[in-house]
Amino acid sequence: MAGNREFNYRRLHSLLGVIPVGIFLIQHLVVNHFATRGAEAFNNAAHFMESLPFRIVLETFVIFLPLLFHALYGLYIAFTAKNNASKFGYFRNWMFLLQRISGVITLIFITWHVWETRVAAAFGAEVNYQMMENILSNPLMLGFYIVGVISTIFHFANGLWSFLVSWGFTVSPRSQVIATYVTLGIFVALSIVGLRAIFAFV
Image 1: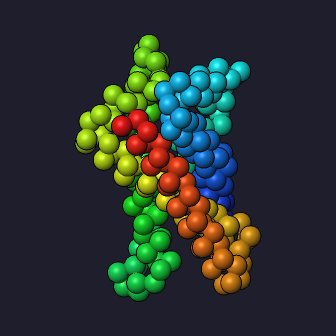
Image 2: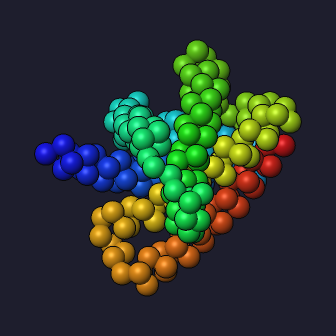
Image 3: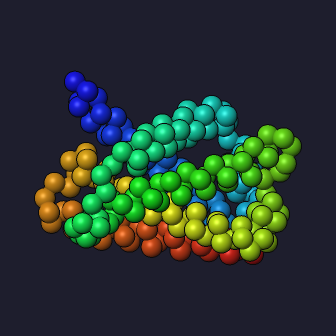
């Protein structure tokens, strides 16, 4: 019974990492990428997202609660998992280890990013181009954001591979190899979008 419950928790954890959290990540990267067109374009895109009807309800039940479960259960997995990359050295074992490490880095980054933006907005600050420009004018914060964004995208892309396996979409070894190349392509593509957005504020 306990084994079945943990199996279901892991599947739910994997599902929430893709839907809705992964979809929100992609949407967030796309909105941020408007910064490459200038301050006005970014501010218009950010304002559009902030003006969505039922935004607070959507953020709470579609983003924050699924993200909270994914993060807390992910920490449990990270600190109870038996990492054997150093013993075997296989590619997937290293991906397993990097998934846990990137998960912890991503959690730290997202927590800080939410504090700097959403929490600041709750106290009256305006989330706009100038806010991000000010944040990223600090070289340490610029480095932190680069590492955080890359880590978050890797965690999503590699987690997508695990999701496809866990939910039975890629069962054969060949399909899993194909999924590896597809998810690596997603990682590279989203990383370009994320980095372009970051440097647009610098």
